[in-house]
Image (cartoon, rainbow, N blue to C red; front, side, top):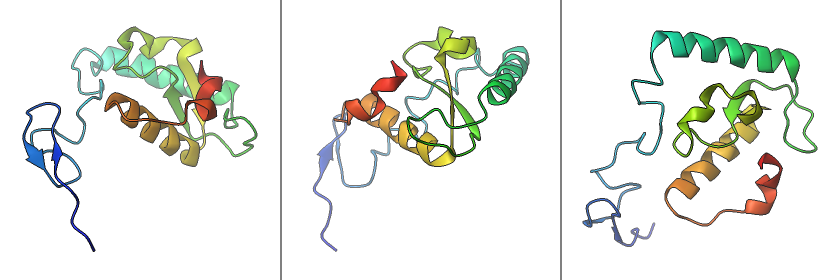
Length: 124
């Protein structure tokens, strides 16, 4: 297998060949590590809202998908808008495969890499 070409880290500027630079944690860019969003009160409010959303929308909201929804995700990532945590209009019920796709898309956007925006235009 060919070696991965070295890339420059946008954070520290050093060259690396691994999946990510050692200076960045796996959860870099996620707002969930913010202690203000992880407090007990906020967590209970989020869990109640998530359960209500799954009750109100038990099927995946991705267009054309009829799988059962198992995850509630934020349409606008919390890193972009932390105030959207408990905003009902910022929630989408998703099946696991579409949740994984959306999470991957959000990670690419967070790293400044290109994505297929047309596929996820329904989130806007």
